[in-house]
Length: 288
Length: 344
Image 1 (tube, each protein chain N blue to C red):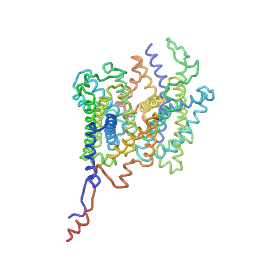
Image 2: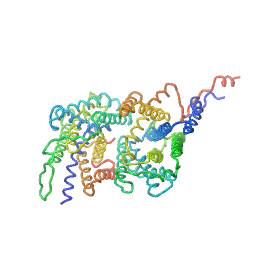
Image 3: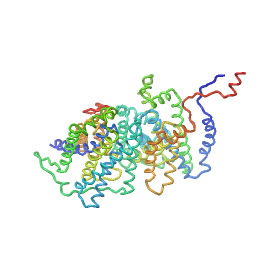
């Protein structure tokens, strides 16, 4: 029974990893952009929520009303102003420009907020739990996060396959040049895509900051976790991203059950094993 | 007399080579005319230059954009501390082993990360570095989370006198930096270098002309890892203490190195020199303002990448047709008097 408990906790942990991964998966899927600053943007969202909370008294969840538009605008502006001009020149420019953005965000936060750890508070729900048969207790909050992750993935599925915008995204993803010939403004579409990726990043950032402490240096490990989830699930596969998050969460939970210090390492090792056995992930879709 | 001949060196490169001799001599004799602070700064410049040259070889020539080179800095450092502190090996022997050790470890690592391409390779190498850092923090004999220190007994092997020891370490650092540069330079002038330059310019084209791109990249990855391990061992021999965070720090050993190479000019041998100087100058100027120098480096690197992707040196080389470390060959027209001489 103890192992069933471990697996369940691992699956729920996978929810937050899937949320971390969605933004990365979207920007890769649509514009083949690997955003090294992704983890720092997650942490930046948490800081924006912190500031909004301090100034308006809104609780973290309600602050999404402000944080989401802010992050959407930031994503749109970043893509429009900086990243679009990196997409035609091979591998290095997007990688190094997002790398630069990552360092700027981290050190900017360090200068602005200091190296202190922060946490967003939502009250009783953080510690509430429900009893399952067999004496397994499941936290309400992790369950909610997992539900949000599933809803986020489902809404993306809907966006991609049932809307005009989604059709344009798929067209650009399949063949950017032809899509442009058909009258799509790629540069604008890419900006919208990073904006949408940032919506999910904002949600992930706030939900993560309620559950764990964060500080200016917390970004890189989020990027790595997101990246591992994306690769395990298979590049560009939306549901694969959720599964990748779950595989990562379960490996970490199993590692932590063996010894608490093993949690993160177990996730990395699972990732490397999958990489060696199935380099294209479990559900590959996009080929790069 | 032929009208056109193939040459490698240029006038600028020959003048530079002549000027480089007294400059290097000045650096070698620094312990006898400079202060301890100067020696520390020059030693730091020397190992940053070595790291920058190595990353440039990897990313600028072989197209392997790794953000996980701190893995080998840390491995070299831990190898040195373990061999000397736990196995009581002589410190010079241990230092010589750090390089081959890091190279050996990089072989199995390459099997995993070479499955990833492009930007995914980058993050994959980072994950590997994290695995090493986390492993080091779990292994008791490596001091777990708090790391290892060099005992005074080990330092006395170099010299019992502190000033002499600083001088010896400074000279070793200088020698390693020159050695690393020589390895990179000679490698690029060799057959492999030609293959590498071809891969840099177009991987499919070079493969279609018979370059074994996989093997070339594999060799470069391992040579770079070995040299990075040696530099890592040397850096921490001077810091006297290594911990998982310090040894495997991405900010200290990879981020600033990437910025140096990008700002100076990626894919050139001169670029890392310029980038290293820009970094050291910025850091010294902004030393009192926390980490603003890193923000500034980030902004400059982004601006360079967007506006002048070949960096400061790339711009200079194009404008003034300068090459200080020629690795390619070019066609030169014979001088007018030589031609008129043959006409008679």
